[in-house]
Amino acid sequence: MLHLTLLPHILAICRLEHDAPVPSWTGGEKFVSITRTGDELSVVCSQQRVPDGVTMEGGWRAFKVEGPLEFSLTGILSSLTLPLAEAGIPVFALSTFDTDYLLVKGVDVETAERVLGQFCFLEEEGANRAH
Image 1 (spheres, helix red, strand yellow):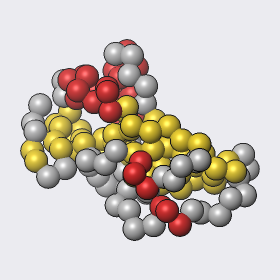
Image 2: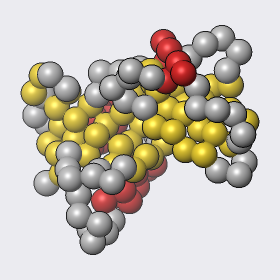
Image 3: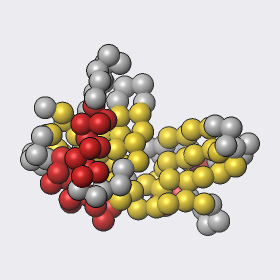
């Protein structure tokens, strides 16, 4: 059974120009993801840190898949995203060296918990909430 932790942060997914410097407003946060491609610089961070004028989609919450996960494991993300998709919940997925994160809109958190709780152990960071 997978173990998921709902992180407390309200997150924003930001888009900057591909050649923009990594913004200083991302520093010092517990949860930051920065991805640069030839098309854009994407930043996921605390919504309260994003300055006015930055292109962003706010109001996201993150479920952390407790790991570390072995690289040889397959189907982790699909086993989580398919039931959410069937429930009509949009997902933004992130991966790190150790684990995966699923971001859902704050308005969808309760429904996502209900769906994921059918086959995962869920808790909120700082307080156990077994489902």
